[in-house]
Image (cartoon, rainbow, N blue to C red; front, side, top):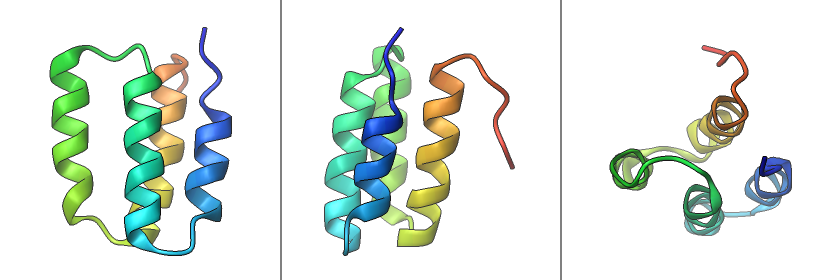
Length: 71
């Protein structure tokens, strides 16, 4: 099982949206998600604000670990 918390912390600590997207992409590529899910997620993060990226990062990491996703 991959611990995605390190990636979440990197996303949270990034200072701008571009850095957050870059760190998020690294997390997605490191996850066990299917190729289709990875592509869908990478496409969807392009239009999100910094706050939404932070929120999605936690949800993505928890879903990857089989935990309940916060809405």
